[in-house]
Image (tube, rainbow, N blue to C red):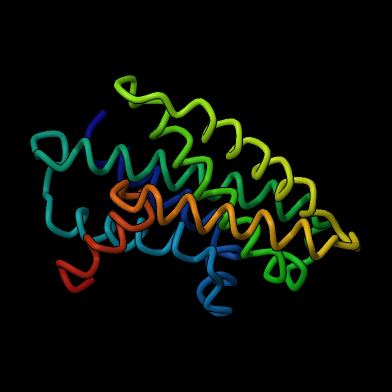
Length: 179
């Protein structure tokens, strides 16, 4: 599989999902961080590399494409769950962001076999369950529970601040190369 098919697949996928991508950019959504820096990075790589197969950037491109695919497909699931209501989708963006961050943090903790994170992983699972359950149209929120789980989310981000989430890695890449 050469440059042509990789680049073409990427470009076609972006075109296929342009409505969602444009919405995230136009609204300056919190969720744009899970899409735009990846697209910018991959576009930059495409412009820099005549033949990606012979480049050391092939792994980055493949990883980025897989991550972009996973993120957009997950966002589309949430959008469908919200009856394709883009305004409601944007209103729920903080909760969706929390889910994305906690899912990635959980994966990183599970990969670390040298430490026992069992209690934190259970707590992350409960927090994920809470936020996944509130991403539905017209739900009334228990503000006390919401505060409790928001605080847990921010505690986890602080406690594991040394773990680089992919959203930050791609944003840093864009910053480094001015893209």
